[in-house]
Length: 177
View (cartoon, one colour):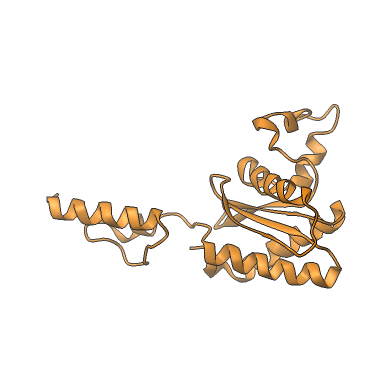
């Protein structure tokens, strides 16, 4: 491979990491490798958050909505007006948990009860694991590419909003590039 091709590949990779990528592969990179894995984009995260906020308004919930990438790092967080201060960390924790453990927090709740297979898991990962409903993994083509966490209502309301978010994600799969 020539130096020029290597420089183009490196430039393309850096642009992708910075979120400035285009969908055209860099010279010398096979299209399949350049396309890579689906990612949670800022555009997709903000769109999803706004959709959930509209549903939260209909439900009368002042929610905090967090979206993470596959590494469980925040991509976007919105706090609705007058939402609980504590809901910020809880929503981030639910998104983190869903991405890190690749499962809904409502499902984890059952496993984390006394006598359950994962009893005490909430005390791991520097206390970032949340074991009640309101968090779901973001998936594309069967792979977890991020997490969604919602806090501000009851557990049932947060879970319903997370499930609503899952439904909307499936309807707009093209946003998860």
